[in-house]
Length: 89
Image (tube, rainbow, N blue to C red):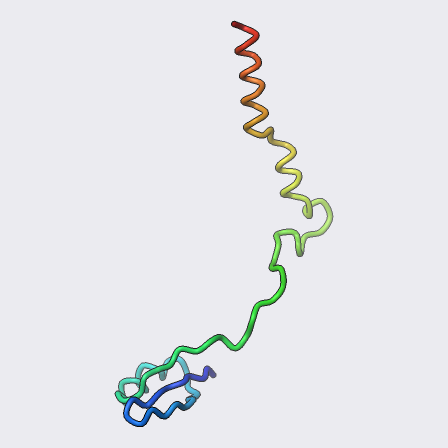
């Protein structure tokens, strides 16, 4: 169950309240003197992240590398076209 932090605008008291997400709107409506305070998440994501190859096995692990090798780069294709134009001139 999530914990929400509220501030009473009359007394400046800050307190935590646990309730279901579905109960939040009704609670705010019934307590107009309370303002919900923004909070930071209670967990942090550390590390370098997730990569497409993390859970692949065998030949599937090098999908990105094999895709790059099979298609010629645009620059190499342009260079070949430039050479063929110069030779025909």
